[in-house]
Length: 184
Image (cartoon, rainbow, N blue to C red):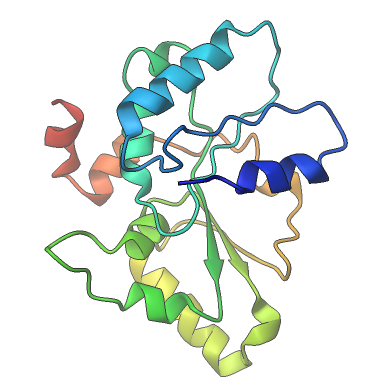
């Protein structure tokens, strides 16, 4: 696989930022090795970071990423501030109602369920009836996360950064079967 996201993001940066790209281009498939090594290397770099944003791209399940950051060695270095999920209002129902194959989880539902903040984007592409249906679907999955309504993903940073919202205990409340996975 070839990653182009990091090159596109780098072109848009006006400050000296660090972009870490996993070698295989997929965080969820080869999570442990690449992710742990990459973030360990970030910690060893002589740089002070205000925030690190890990973007999982597309329909990736956030649970393995959260677990990785809540176990040594990463839990000794980093803290998850919150899980922010971007929801495309015009396609949300298509993804949340999709039946996964082979007994796997619906990643769109997982993203919404475990979100601490939900950025509901592309509101300009849905009418008021569709918007109500999307919000109702989101609330049926996650009753607590604030929904931030937007177009073009324009969000005030204080709504998604330094929110101190993530809790592994809350994840266990959402899905108690995760406790066994976490303790493996």
